[in-house]
Image (cartoon, rainbow, N blue to C red; front, side, top):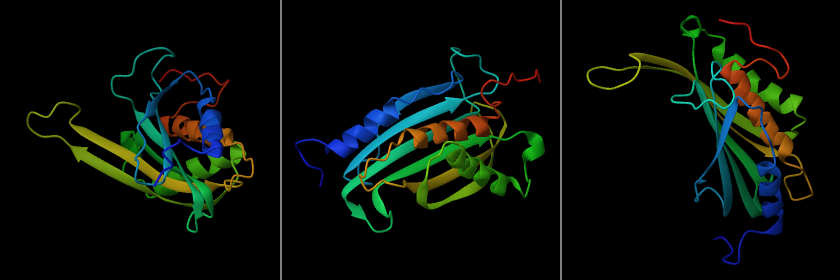
Length: 195
């Protein structure tokens, strides 16, 4: 049961560090209501991206979207190996030539592991799934007739997540990198060629 006097200082510091991250302009960031039953203290954010979107342009239906959730249990949890835990979900639309690619789950998982490594986001207890989905619409349901997506769900514990002063910004930056990669955005500083 959460402390009615408010979240502990280490959680407030973690949220402040995560909130200070300024992602690249092609990403649209919005706060989310975090699921309350996963841990005594939670925080969440959503990120949307579209490789064809110009910075500042509104997104009607993004090609890629994700959610990052921070969980905190002051008592710690053995399965987490710490007092903090990140949970993420990313969904990206597939190009027709990617549908059915047997290597896609491995490639999708590498998006996450490489993003964590590139951003110096040390971690333990990393686990998750990568799933390909296809949806076909019939009748009066609005939207494209067919959607093919890849979904990545994962969780990990930041090293030092036991409250020993770890700066969690690099984990939020890694998540931004993951969403950018899944959206097909070029690395920062590289111009995208016209399609």
